[in-house]
Amino acid sequence: MAKRRVMFTFPPELITEPVIYNLGLQFKVVTNIRRADVTEDRGWVVLEVEGREDDIERAIAWVTSKGVRVDPIGKDIIEG
Amino acid sequence: MSFATGLRCRECGREYPIEPIYVCEFCFGSLEVSYDYAGIKRALSREKIASGPRSIWRYKELLPVGDDVVDINAGLTPLIKADNLGRALGLSQLYIKNDCVNPSYSFKDRVVAVAATKAREFNFKAVACASTGNLACSVAAHGARAGMKAYVFIPADLEMGKVLGAAIYGPTLVAVEGNYDEVNRLCSELAEKYPWAFVNINIRPFYAEGSKTLAYEVAEQLGWRAPDNAVVPVASGSLFNKIWKGLNEFHHLGLIGPVKTKMFVSQAAGCSPVTTAYQSGTTQIRPVKPRTIAKSLAIGNPADGYYALKTIRESGGSATMASDPEIVEGMKLLAETEGIFAETAGGVTIAGLKHLVQAGAIKRDELTVAYITGNGLKTLEAVQDSVVKPVLIKPNVNSFEEAMGLKVAATGDTRRNPGVKD
Image (cartoon, rainbow over all chains, first blue to last red; front, top):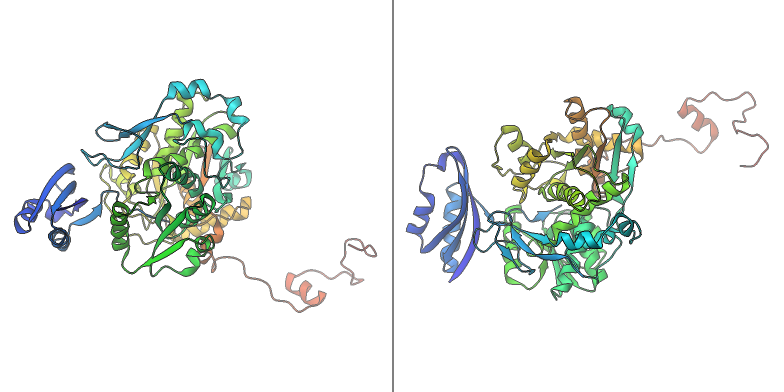
């Protein structure tokens, strides 16, 4: 089993959708939220996604296609 | 010996031993180095610092390293009283901290010196980074000096000119096909997989500490006092926060008086997630896609953005931004008034400073330090269409005087001392 630590940033239109619940339901991955800050119009969640490598890849691709920004927990590490 | 005692989570406060780790296993918050300040206080004095090496290592007690450091002579760069620029902006006590003149021509030498030293202490055989410019140069240079392999990852579409300054040191240059986010993600995954010291990933808590020396030096160069204002170009936000931390450490150790410095963020308008959050009154940083000529500040999702907002609040400062034309004007103004050719990030500092003065956030008689973090030779393309063009003349005196609009003397001899050989 592989683990990936990621940060999801939600656009306002997705705040009311149970995206993380659906992620676990549709893909064979276990999500474990560690920290979050969600308000009525924006939010981010830091979590660990555990599962088979290809399931994690598909899950991340799906959540990205929904409009969620997915970043490594170190955020942007390419520096000038 | 090192006075670093461990790592501490900036979110939940959990403590960890000194290891090449960067996030808390519980809350995934970022880690920061803790120190034995009582021990440092006993070991450090103004006199001890003043008699130390002419580099960042004069503050070694306040850095998380042992005695065997990787040294390319980073730091102790000039702090210049900028009277000409001050007059142009309406400031009577303006200083420029000129970090253009570091060995690889940017402030990154401060952070990478600490990261490379730590990497060697941890027995890593290679240092690595993902970069589009300054960081690549510094990692490659320090890798060469330390006798370590250096891996530098760059986006495949990056102009070769941008990485020549790194290529000369002989690192392994890896050009990754893919957009910015894909390169970013790949490097994060590689950092998990390979036993390399990725300076701003698994060594980040140590790496970031190097920026504190920009606060120590300014305080020392000002005669052991903190400035009233500090204007700092912001990308990840790390440099900004560490300048604040460094000033407060100096006060805590009794080396300077109370710190009343207001900390000001300056960002490029085309990549201003921190300034935008500040101006919106929120603590949430909304990631952006960078679109600016200030490539060295083009971090759309800054790791320390939240903490930068906290530093602004704590210090009573604020945040501003500068458009691309204003950045170029800022670069030119600094060069034309003080003879300092800074890269685009320096233009962001100067243009931001101008805004802050105009808005009344910085007052005429306050002691203000503007941080210039990289050399202009690295971003020639930003100013190539905005600077004076050469006047073309024929190889004779008449042609020169005609072009210059000079009045030709009756004798035709325009030398200052006719008959005397210059």
